Length: 142
Image (cartoon, rainbow, N blue to C red):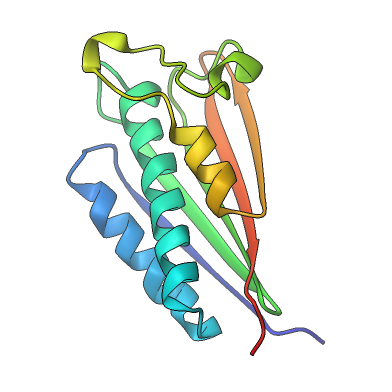
């Protein structure tokens, strides 16, 4: 049977919690003995997903962001969920340089960054109900 472990983290959608969330996921993933590059990629992808949840999920209020991370064998699965505004058009939102908040001078590269650093990224969203970003990465074996 493959090794299995799971953790869940829930926090308020405040920007100062982004680095906390990234650090917690990195500490959890450390049990897989990832390379420095793999760990940096996971931390960056988590940062992007959490920042999106905070900025786009809850633009006018504070809500909850939930991260569930699972380790199955040498693969990590990370879900970042919010229960906020949701995404009207996921295909459009995934386009590089697209941003629904141009006034914030954001680059619109969040999903592109996640897709670059993770093996698989799935986005599920319902307007008015929230968004879940599911990311998968398999560690290189030594």
